[in-house]
Image 1 (cartoon, one colour):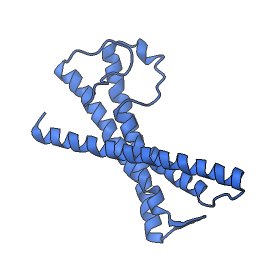
Image 2: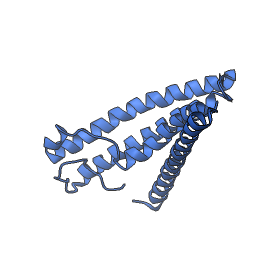
Image 3: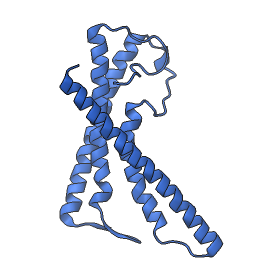
Image 4: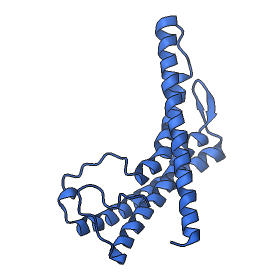
Length: 182
């Protein structure tokens, strides 16, 4: 791989890792806010008006900013009942097809997320709950995370194509093909 390719790959991995850490920090924040809500409500009879909103808003960020990391590290749940019985080469080709189909779905999500974010920004739409916040920052992670998913799915497909093109040995073990870090 060229020097530029390696630099871009390191930058991409740093971005994915940084957003995953941010999503993890939000998980901790949500956990603490829910714990605070429980204690305030049941022990002091003084519920908060903000904990539910914080949780709702954070879940969008956690989901969409953490997903590219989960995909890159093959940390998602898989049911491989059929896939593990396929020959390694067929499994690799199936990985290419699945990555391209999933990238197409993520393109649609990114596009729709971008349109909705832009319309909310232009319209000045706000969420009127405990906090009055503009809607566009709440849905921006849908566009950003989906775009990053497109890139990660294409990266995986490209990796699988490279294995086929170069004639690298194809792993024969069951489980995900090409699980080594890119």
